Length: 148
Ligand code: FES
Ligand code: FES
Image (cartoon, rainbow, N blue to C red; front, top):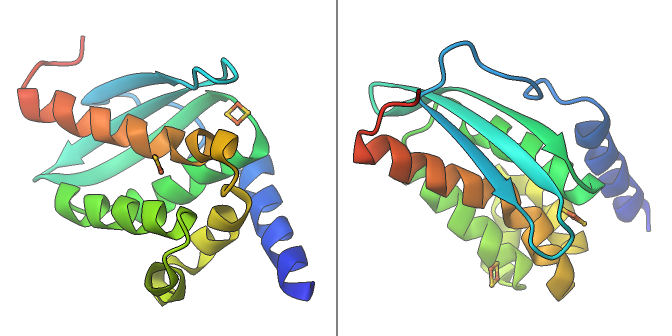
């Protein structure tokens, strides 16, 4: 359908060029996250300021879904508190699992494109990889361990 084409285009746009691809000078957390299913991995870097995500970057290799998901995740996460970010990732998870209310959430429109293609069980991890890395980043930062 026309909507599918729009979604495809959105995913490819995030995959090909993301303004969040790269590294940070002084990250508070650097999190490697590997998809055990395929062996792909991403490296997530986060800097926080006043308990908000001030800056976020990702690098690494993976399928279009994982890379587009990392890009969209970064876009949604920057400027947010950990609680806000957790709310979004929960919504996204519900969306993947077919929750209609989550799918109608307008704030998450771009992620609907991904949730649609990530429904296959072996694709769920692709879509959640960056979000899982963000979870780890929160744990690490909250633990107070400095990033060396
Ligand atoms: Fe459904 Fe993890 S997103 S089991
Ligand atoms: Fe490896 Fe998607 S196939 S992250």
